Image (tube, rainbow, N blue to C red; front, side, top):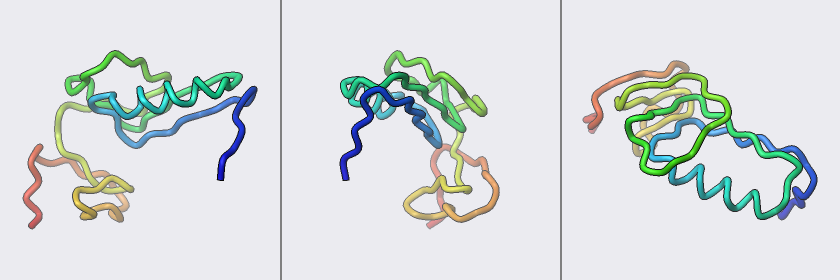
Length: 95
């Protein structure tokens, strides 16, 4: 299904932004569709992992370069359904 977003106010909600590559690509793609406004929100941001310049409009929490899972965040489909966000080492060893 394709939705015409021309002239509409768009809010992009991301779980986590680290390198910035994905959100920058999404932002570029959506701006080509001529929305009235385009705002970005991320629950978590890892500024030290940033590879591209992109300014997120709203950030829930800035976190260091640590592994996080739970509340929809996962590692290889593991931990996604935890009701809390768990912080651990950068290289998870669940398996």
